[in-house]
Every structure is written in C-alpha cells, then in structure tokens.
Image (cartoon, rainbow, N blue to C red):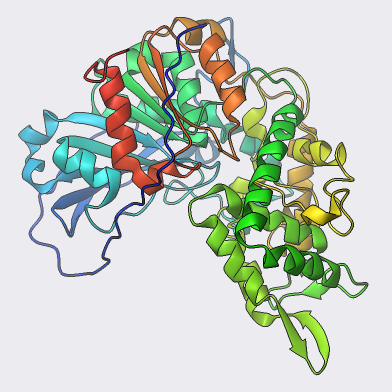
Length: 507
C-alpha cells in the first residue's frame, strides 16, 4: 500500500457569492481552428465580467471511436453503418484571461481540461470570473477547456424528446457509446486537435463521475495525454464487481446523513413520517405536471443530503409540505411544485438512464437495479411507512435511480423500456485497464471526502492503495461534502497542485 496522506478539518468554508449582471462585451479576439476530422462551424468568442474571454468550439467525432472496446488490441464493437449515424458533434468551451487572448500568447499557456460530474450533465455556464475557473484562467494563466460530454448541453444532446422518438429504433444499442470510454476518446480527439498530437494537457480535473472518466483516461492514455490528474470526489469503486455492494456502503452513508439531518431539524422527522403516510393513500398524490408523489418518492428527496446547502433545501421543502384544506390535511401545492423541480431527469435524462452503467466494468453481469437490490436487503430499515427503527424516523435514500421512478415521474415513463434494457445488459465492455493504471506515472491527486454520500470514502481509499499509479497523493478531509469543488474549488485545486509540484512536500 502506498502512503496516503490524510488531512482532517472541522471548520467549514463557503464559496464567495458572485454577482450576476450583464453588460455589452468589449471588442473580442476571434480565432478559428481547422480540425483533421471536421468542425461543424467556426469558433466564436464573447466576454464575461471580470476579464475572461470565452471561445466556443465544435468538433465532429465518430459515434463509435475506432479504439473502443479493445481486447488484447482487437476492436469488439462495430460502428453504425451510415455516415449520418456514425458522427456526433462535441462542444468545448475555452476560457482564457483577456490579457492572454492574443493568439501567440494563448498558444503558450498551460491547458486544463475539466470533466464534469454526472453522468449526463453539461459543464457549467460561467457568468463572471468567480470560482475556480476564473482562478485558473487569471491567476494561474491557463487555458481552461470545459467539455460538454457527449449527449449533453451542446454536444448533440440526447434529449427526452429524442429518446422518446427513437426508443423503438434500438436506442439502447446507441447509448452504449455514451459511457466513460467514449468520453475519454472525445477528450483525446480534442487534445490532438486543440493542442497537437504530441502535446499533453497540463492538468485534467475530474469531479465525481468526471473522476470516473479520468480514471479510465489514466488507465488508457495517462502518461501520453496529461501531466497532472486531479480527482475530486471521483475515485470509482473498482473492487466491486456487483454495483449492489457499492450501494450497500452508500446506504450506510445516507443513514448517517439522515440522522444528522433530523438532529438539526428535529421537527422534520414527524413531518416526513406524516407526509409519507399522506402519499401512501389509495388515491395517488399527483402534481400538475403529472408526477406521482409516493412514500418512496419522499424518501428519494434524500439525494439533497449529500451536497452543500442540501439540508436547507430539504428543510424548506418539508416545512410547508402539509397544509389544512377545509379541516383535511393534504400535500401542499408549494411542496408539489418543489417536487416537480427536484429531479433533473427532464432536462438531463441520461443521468437516469446511464446511472448504474457507470459501474459496469466488463464482468459479464447486469446492473439489474443494483441500488434497489441493496435497499431490499435492508427493507425493514428502509420501509417508508413503518421503518424498523421507527423512533429514528423514516430513512432517506441517496443518489440512486430506482425502478419506481419510471412509473411515477412523468418524463421518465416513456423511457421505461430503454431503462430496463440497459439494466439487463451483460455485455458492457471494460472501462479500465488495471495493469496500465497501476503503472501510470502521471502525477495524480485525489481529494476524498470522509462524509461523501455519493462516492464511498473507504472504497475510494481501497482503489487508491491497490490500483492507482506510483505518483498518487491523497487529500482526505471532512471539511467538504461531495460538492466541495463548488463550495471552495480554488482552495481544493491549489492544495492538490501544491501536493503534486512538491511545494507541499510529503511529510
């Protein structure tokens, strides 16, 4: 086992509040780029307050990259037949300080690529120079590249309308090209096009699922593609073949967070129990958007307990969740409106569909609703009406996509067949070359959060100690939750870089 460096903090820091305002941008530096494969349009630029220039890039890439699914160097996946089906568009947003926007100066900058969490989410749309992106661009003088992962944002989006429309045309076969292996190949394409075939990213940063993608990247191209790798709350649980085992660990984290929540908001324990009973009536509780709110749907609101501000978000939902209507208690319109907006599956359906596929690593087994299976093994504890530890209140669930979602959430109902097909799939290819990962010499830092409810700390440390390369260091802390990079990204990234460039040496 390598030496893993753990730093523990009790004080919490909040990110500085940013002002959002608009004014006409100043004259801009424009640049065009010609790509070897093809681009759908020329680059365009604009500026945001605080002195940043933002340039949009589009690339056309294969839906099925040639190197996908290699087994001993042999490709095992066939590309789609028609050219129209075989290409998709990838969007990359480049951010630099205005002082560095001139072409020659820009070309001399170090480059950082960011891989977003998810799966199924686009990168943030910056509005000013606040946060870690502005810090890297202005204070560290870097080019920051934000990749909208395939199927999200402006990268040929896989919308719920498109999924519904193509559901009967083998869409589940297409979706196998929307995992970490394909995202890594997209990142490689961008590297060669924007930096040059022999150039490396100076830094690749992966948050949450982006860290899963970065682990795949390290295991396939690490030494030749990047100088430094930074994983924040994103070390995948490589030691478990059945993702149910990972979810079983996460359930313990959720249980701990539930107890913390009730300790902070003790009245919410009774509100949640009463609300669950109201939603367990024979007549289903339906929102104006057609969503059904069941007792288990109330439990699923525990997703928010794993992120900064999540306790407050849930509390404000529950405090007015029940109202008196002519002497009868019912679920309030205010709560139903908040419930409709709670899950992001309407705008980011891949987050639901691809959720458990991110754990599948070529072991010829199906995910088979792994989170649901983990909950059923502890059904008495997680009973939404009469839990085993009733005095403790009902237990919430965490970042888990459960089969009843596809019956109760209106925007997921049309996707139920595709979801089941993906859950039944057993031929998922390997995402990681573990031998290459163990020998990868790329300088790597992992920020691991002890109370992380989405990526289990113990499983992550197991991977760091047994699978990561010789140049890995760990920044372990209970100062942040899973969303640490959003809370205090500048400080976390500076800490990790300092660990890797030896300005914060081993001691």
